[in-house]
Amino acid sequence: MEKNQIPAHIGFIMDGNGRWAKKRLMPRNYGHSKGADVFKKCIDWCKELGIRCATFYAFSTENWSRPDDEIQGIMNLLRRYIKDIRDTVEKENRIIILGDISRLDEDIRNDLIDLQEISKNNTRFIVGIALNYGGRPELVRAVKQISQDCVSGKISPDDISEELVEKHLYTSEMPPLDLIIRPSGEKRLSNFLIWQAAYAEFVFMDVLWPDFSKKDLEYAIAEYAGRNRRFGGI
Ligand code: FPP
Image (cartoon, rainbow, N blue to C red):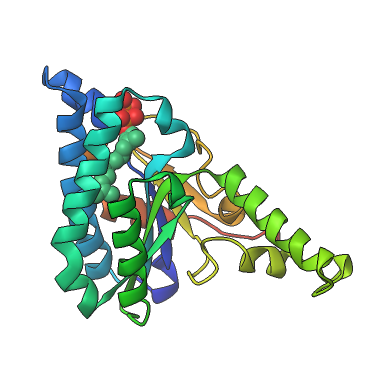
């Protein structure tokens, strides 16, 4: 495959954990736990396939409406993951968190801030983890920051451009989003990277996230490579 046929940045909507567990008469958190295993493997697959950045939708602003034990289950997976990756992170992956982490437990919050800091000079691969993330809240946050700069006189409204807005998004230091993969048969964006998805390709797949494999990733990339991206041209 040519280099420009490999997406630089893929967004993953890790959907279907609950249904996967239900099919096995197991609790939903069992599905999330398997989903977290796939998340870890998927980072390696992306690297093996020459992708530079992957962003994973781990917890949306809407997910707080789930039962408390499910929320705690996901947070505990995150805790465990943070402990597991410290070594590898220091070597090659840069971690960028997307979302408002102020609502997360203090230990997780501090560890995430730490992880971002110690990994910030790693260039091999960027792992984006969307936590308490929503695309609309991300845009509201950008609008507030830009308004502050207008009020303080740092910039004038005429300075506001697409490039400036992008500087205020969580993805400002990531390559442009080329592809969004959503398994589980659902065909919607669910408030994920709504600005960034403007010119992304979408691949929807029937596989449930805990069953997602390297072959599925390869299929999605081949599908992407076969698309004719015109960016509004002809
Ligand atoms: C959507 O599936 C999945 C989530 C809301 C949680 C995703 C979280 C993980 C895979 C664990 C993340 C862990 C780390 C370490 C980042 P769903 O529960 O909505 O599935 P359903 O639609 O089948 O019910």
